[in-house]
Image (cartoon, rainbow, N blue to C red):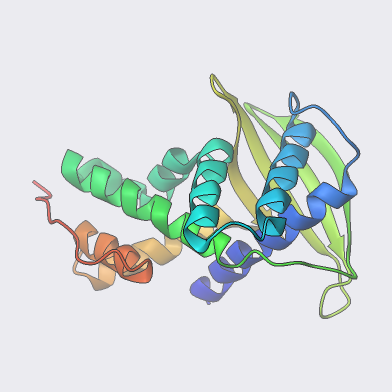
Length: 211
């Protein structure tokens, strides 16, 4: 169940990014809504540039996600308390594998979505974060899909911290899935790293002691 929820959350994001660029009017990226709009614009440019090879598109998506998502912060959160017990080498291996996994998952699922409408419901500040609420109408079951973008400002600009699909947090769902993988690997973080690398075709993991 957890894996199904996590996969649904992840696979819905490309659809939203494609629709975002069509739904928002032109707006500067110096506020949370404008930031999401700019992200959608960049994603569609990559999608529609058929002159790019697969590797070139992948490289552009790597840059896009690194510039738009707080990948390191998300990676630390989803690893949970295992982060505190990992060696520096394991942390480096994990974050590298996690970035590859996230980018590969998102970029390979980007596609065109037509016949659906996207609208922003509202945007409000919540502590140190901003929540941009949106909705996609015309889903497979005829019911709208509610999506919240959790955005926070860093010294380098806005970054997406979490995506909440129909009240299911991508970060929380991913954390539950990763914890399950680690538990089934006898508590080994290296087991998770190996699983992530296997999913992205990066081969075996370099082990590190948990100390």
